[in-house]
Image (tube, rainbow, N blue to C red):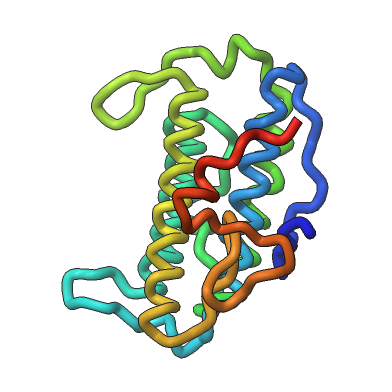
Length: 192
């Protein structure tokens, strides 16, 4: 049985102008859906939680994710974005942050899908260095996964259920889930 996520906020993914780049949009939509799912499962009481005095709160991570994603896309990739003051939701609730994440992702997907291969390989400023746009894009996807993982650790520390992102968790599994916890499982031959 395939993995099923509790939420799919971006079920429709635009078609890439160049089919060789479709995986970019499929992955960005998938990662946004996973992030939406985790954020939607957070309780309102979790917003002020921080596991250590040096750690960010849940709300600070949600805000940082939205604001830093806007910066990556606007400043480094050159996509049209709302003004920074319009990024955060008007309500401080996990569901509001999750909804805003998706609202911002939809137009990005549409814009990015229209770009030709040459656009993806242009060199652009990235903080104090220069990189290809495609490199910056993948760095953004990884940055998002990092912060989503922080929040799943916080959920575990708060004794809240942790939803699956790439596979089963101690809280959510299904028939056919194979978490590869043994040497034998890691050595299985590829299926034809």
